[in-house]
Image (cartoon, rainbow, N blue to C red):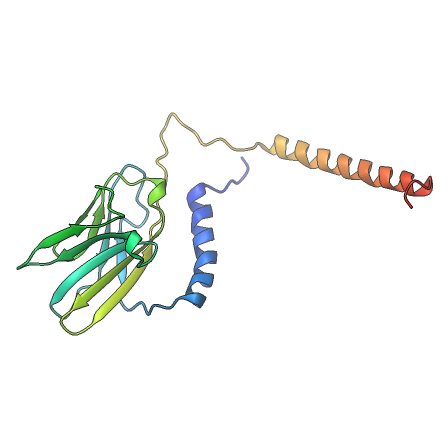
Length: 181
C-alpha cells in the first residue's frame, strides 16, 4: 500500500513552516507557557488549553483566537473573589474557563485549528502565551480514507511522459518546418 499523508500531518507540517515566518515578524514577547490536553484532540471531542501556574495574584485572563485583536477575543475571566466571565466577539458557546484560567473547548472541529493566545494580568505584570491547536479527524471502522493507488500514480506518470514527448515532437516539427518565426 502506498504511503499517504493525512490532513493532520500536512497541517502540522504547514504549521511548522508557517511558524518560522510568524516568529520572525512577531511583535509580542511570549513569556507564558501553555500546554494542550490531549495533545491531538479529535473532532467532536474536547480540549483543555492550560497556562502555567502564576506565582502572583491573577487579576484577569483573556483568551483570543489567532492574535490579540479585539475581534478575535473569546472571553475575559476574573478569578475569585470576583469570578466574572465576559464573553467577547469570538465566543462560540463551546468555550468555558476554569479557575486556573485554562480554556476548555467542547465539540471541537477542524475549524478550531489555529493559534490560541492567552493574556494574563497579575498584580505585578502582564504575560502572554500562545499555542497552536491541531485537531485530528476521527477514523471510523466503516469509513476508510481514500487514496490514489500505485497503479493510478503509474498511469498518471506514463501519461505525463507521453504528453511531454508529444509536445517536444510537435515543437521540433514546427521549428524544422519553419512555422515559428
